[in-house]
Length: 65
Image 1: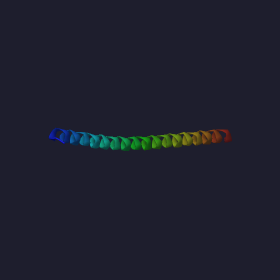
Image 2: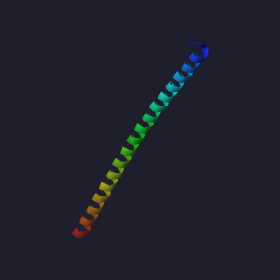
Image 3: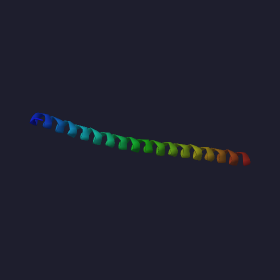
Image 4: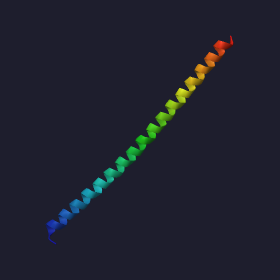
């Protein structure tokens, strides 16, 4: 093989490595985003349940008087 072909193959290999690293980083960030979304939805559910309990307690005490 001549020098240009070897250089071209090395450049292609380097680009493939860069793309692989970028893909791995993107997958990691996506996984973090999914986890953050899960935590957010769990917090929303907890808040909604807490508000429901508070409203029920308020109604119970207001009817009890």
